[in-house]
Length: 257
Image (cartoon, rainbow, N blue to C red; front, side, top):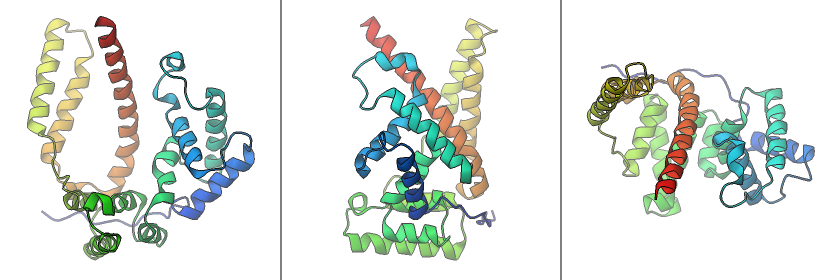
């Protein structure tokens, strides 16, 4: 089967450490009374902003009080959204989750990203290869990343193939059994239909069947960068919804104990 090659892509003006720093400087200038001076506290604040809509506001009184006032988080969310909209189509969640980590990327990964040799998704994969994860020295780790990058650029493979190479290097190449996932989804969908043919909940498990089938049939090299760009935002939303369901489930379990 012919391998899908990397395609030309539009430059991402936000995909550099300098661009991220400029965005943070603009945010700090806009809200000097809210934005912390230290990088560590700023990252914590922005991650709290990213999680604002992971749960409804009615949940904010449950458990331990948050580190940051919700009013401040909403102000930061609103202002950052405005700043991002001036120059990009990137949302707040994507900026915090995908672009902010650029500041912590190894220098060689940042430079490859800023030279346009890799896109942001590929840079994230390379950045995962740390000395701690590999159990090697920093010099050995940089050499390993460089070899992977050279192979990736020579073969002109899609980002999904680089992701697999990184997973293999980290010993993570254990995929879930798609056949079992599909079988479990079939059983649950059938149970729901038998209990109530008008209950649309079974559609959720029907979709899981399709995902399981795709995991079994679609090869990594068939997934293009454009596919990933379209899929990842949807995955982000699905993850949020599933997290809410799991939290609700855990609360219900505690009430029955």
